[in-house]
Image (cartoon, rainbow, N blue to C red; front, side, top):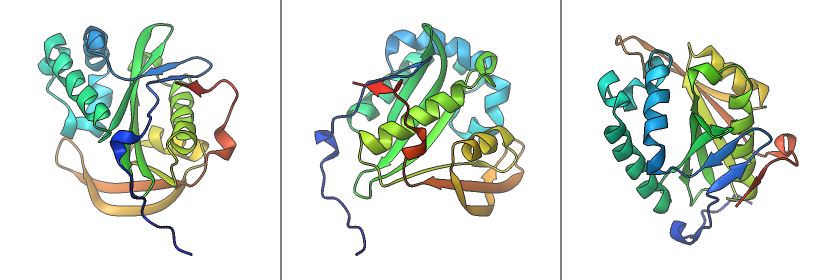
Length: 205
């Protein structure tokens, strides 16, 4: 039997606002973190630009606490409407990144995106955050399917997806535009359960 779309009011869904892992606190955005966010975005600007340039401000905007406050206010609004589920990632009280679930509630489908602050990259925090949010999607939000993707040259995201058991299901030519206008393929991955990623240290409320 084919799966059916779910007749569901997203506003009725209880979405966790904080997720705890062994090393991380993953929290609903808060405007009071704007200064930390601005610092992280400036520090990581060159690393983020190739992959996120279409949704980034310029360097001056990203460095502005007031501009980031506006961005955070919009994130909170979308979270409360259940249109997007953005989260800030902290390690020992320091802002180290961002992760987001983009839901299609009727289908039980979620798309995951994330970034990790430059000085905290390549320490396993990306894997830990993504693993936790995959578990949240399936166990707390009744996901049927989780997808993620990246521009083909983004080798770091490719390694993490494969490491966590995501299966490549599409490679689309000319799908992603780099800052210089170059067009590269987009690579898409899927995951249909979180059985291999559940660990006792992950909890949410």
